[in-house]
Length: 301
Length: 306
Picture 1 (tube, each protein chain N blue to C red):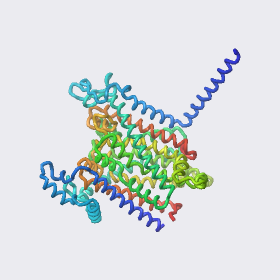
Picture 2: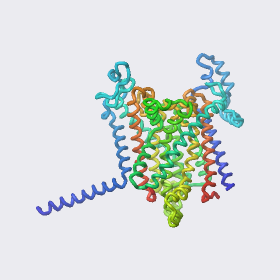
Picture 3: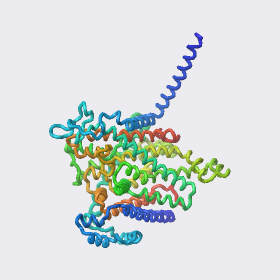
C-alpha cells in the first residue's frame, strides 16, 4: 500500500501534465480560436447575467447623473463609465446592450443559415433549371444595397429588435447560399455520395445526411463571420434610428446619443463603441481560428 | 468568349427584372398612404381620393407594376412626394457628392491595403506580420460610424484640422475617406497577402530566383502582377457597392449623397425616391459585377468560359 500510493499519484500527475500540456499546445497552435471563444463566452455571460453584472437597471435615471448645469456626469465612483444626457448609468446600459447585439447577431444568422443552406443544397444538388432559378434569385438579393434594403424593410415592419433581427436574417442569406452551393458542387461527385445513390438513398437523405455534414466546416466559418457583421449591421440600423428604440439600450443607439453630446461628453462614445469592437472582434477571431483548423492548405497559418 | 458574354448578359437581364419586381413588392408593402402624406393633415377625403387617382394608386397591383415599368423605360422614376421634384433630378443632384465620396473611400482603401498586403506577405510569420495582421483584424471589426465619430472628435473638434462634417471641398473628404479606408483596407490587405503567398510558391517564381533575379524584381515584376488578380476583382465589386452610397458614413459626416437621400426618403415614406435610389443602386451593383466578369477574361488569360 505504502508503495502503490505515490505510484498512482505519480500517474495522475503525469496524465494531468499531459492534459495541461495538450491544452497549452493547442492554445499555442490556435491562439485566435481560443481568444475568440473567450470573448464570445464573456459576451454570453454579460447578456445572460446582465442584471447581476450591471450596477443599476438600464432605464433608471439618476438626479446626480447630471451636473449642476444639466450636463451628463463624467465617470466617477458611482457611474464608473459616466452617465448619459438623462442621467442613466452608461456602464449598466453597455452591459444590457450585449443582449440586443447577441440576440440579433445570433438569431439573424440562424435565419440566414437556414434559408441559405437549404437553397444552396437544393441548387447545388439538383442543378439545371432549379439551380438557375435559385442562383438568379440569389444574385438579385445580393445586388441590393443591404443596409438600404434592411432599413426599408424595418421601416415597413416598424422598428423593433424583433423586426431588425428578422429583416437582417431574411435578406442576408445570399452569400450563404452561394458558399453552400459551391461546396456541394465540390463534394457531390465523391464516391461515397455515389455509393449512397447506388444503394437507393433518396435525394433528401443524400442532401442532409451525406452532403450536409461534409460541408459543415466552411459553413460554420461563414456563420461566425456573419454573426459579427450582423452585430455591426444592427448597431448601424439602431444608430440611424431605424432599429432598437430607447430606452432599451443597443450599442448602436447609445453611439447615436453620443453623436449629439460627444463635444462635451465623449465617454458616451467610448464605452458602447469599444464594447461593439470587442464583440465583433470575438466572432471574427473565432471565424479565423475555425478556418485555420479546417483548411489544411491555408497559407496564412 | 462571346457566348459567355451573351449568357452573362442574359443572366443580368433576369436579375434586373428580379430587382424591379422585388423593389415594387417592397414598396407596395409600405402601410402608409402616400396620398395622405401629399395632401397633408387637413385634406378632405375627396382631395385624397383625387390625389390617389392621379397617382394611379387606385388601379390593380399588376397594372401599377406595368405602368411603373413603362415609365421606367422612359427614364421616368416618378416625382418625389416631399420635394415635389422628379426623382431622376434629385438623384442626379446627389450623384456627384456620392461619386466623390466613393472614389475617396476607394482610393484610401487601396492606398492603405495594398502596401500593407505586400509588406505582410514579405514578412510572413515574422513579428511585424503578426502585429499588422492583428491590427487588420481589429480594423475589420470597427463599425465605420463609430470610427468616424472618434476621428471627428480628435481631428475635427479637439484639433480643428478638418471640418466637422458637410461636403465642402477636399479637406472635408479626408476624414470620411480615411474612416472607410481603415476599415475596408483590411480586406484588401488579407486578400493580397494570401494571394501573394500562393503565387510566391509557384514554379515560375523559383525559375526567376534561379536565374538570379533580385527580390525586388521578383516581387514587383513577377509576383505582384499575378497576385493582384483577386484584388482587382474585389476592387471592382467594391467600387460598385461604394457608389450605391455609404449611408453610415454619409449620416455621420453629414454628407449629402445618395445614401442620405435614401435614408431621409425612408423616414418620410417618400416612396418614389426610395424606389428610385434602391433601383439605381442595385442596378449599379449588377452592372459592376458584369463588368468585373468581363474584365476578368482580359486580365487573366487562364480563365476560359466555354
